[in-house]
Length: 123
Image 1 (cartoon, helix red, strand yellow):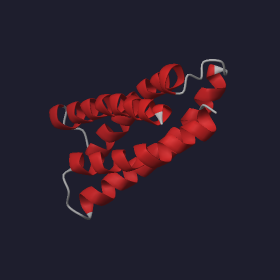
Image 2 (spheres, rainbow, N blue to C red):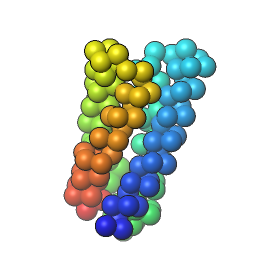
Image 3 (cartoon, rainbow, N blue to C red):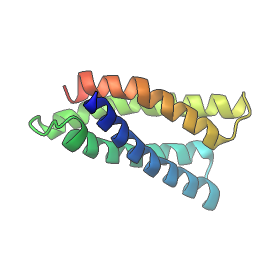
Image 4 (cartoon, helix red, strand yellow):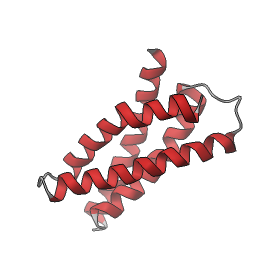
């Protein structure tokens, strides 16, 4: 249970960075919300990898490059699911893009990301 809580904390920190970048690019630089979402995801992923490897899963004995490759594979799935989910909720359900992003981020963080990181990336 402690690992789950630490992984969720790492996810929250990564998500805060993700949201910050998304909002800055979308609201202040007037980028398309999908572009801002992708850039935010990249930033959040980097932060989350570092925190998960060194703190949440304490997986520093494994080769960083091998873990990074597996993390990127999981992250590519995450970014595709995130972009599709944010687009679907924003365009078809008419939610604000940030509300869509919160919903999708929470769903992916509690399911897809945690289980794949625990069982595949940092196993």
